[in-house]
Image (tube, rainbow, N blue to C red; front, side, top):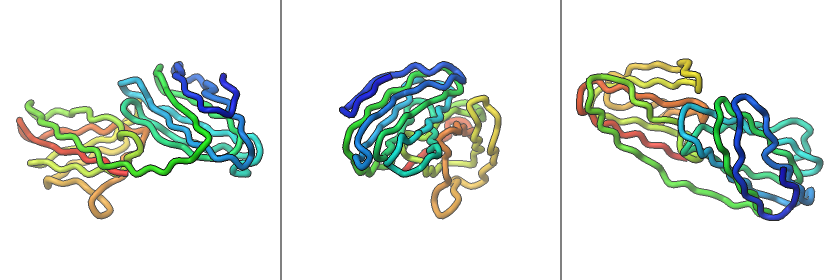
Length: 198
């Protein structure tokens, strides 16, 4: 456990289901900070972070919770005052982070990936949303199916898309940070494009 108010960075191993104190961060009550967290491990996983304020800051005695998926996922947290941050993961994994005594704004560009599924129809694991980008649009050259599943592969959403687009609420849907995206092609050599935005 690290206790200071300077820049700090480290990697933490999280055992499956065990709550680990990532940091106990001490700073002045009105001092702002930024913390950046990265999930370093591949595979089916999700990480829940709990921020406990130590007086001042947000002025709350409750817990503030965040969720990350596995690599290449992560996110930026901001706050003020001293706090303790704990983490618990579904499966064994590694988490890295850094804290700084300032607040940064961020504007992330879209991140797209094009998949060519050259098999008969089969689900391809796309994974968790990339760092801080939870809006998702999927386009394809033909119909496709999508699934959103938990780290234990329990299905939350299973939908067939008859057209070559899948979107809700204008041109995207929310890809929750703790759900894995899986897509099944409808024809061999089908091209699918997955776009994640902030």
